[in-house]
Length: 94
Image 1: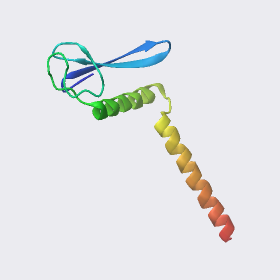
Image 2: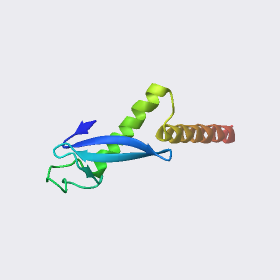
Image 3: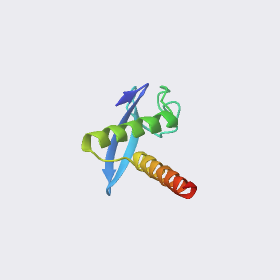
Image 4: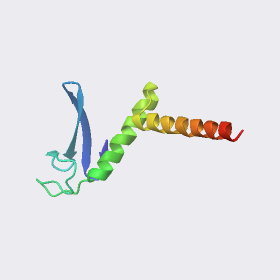
């Protein structure tokens, strides 16, 4: 995946997914939070965009594999809690 001056590559080390950002101009590895390449000065996307892209990639992967993402699990738990609260409220009013 490539966005405004950076390429995102993921690998695994001891089972943990490692994300790296590489400058598309000079191909040097960069820190996620850098705004410009420390080697050639090319503009990089920044930490917020990198996080957003990684979340979108995780959601796409989850859709393809049928997995439920952590965000989806949290949303489902919240919806269940709301439904339970509504049921308890309606039971106490009856």
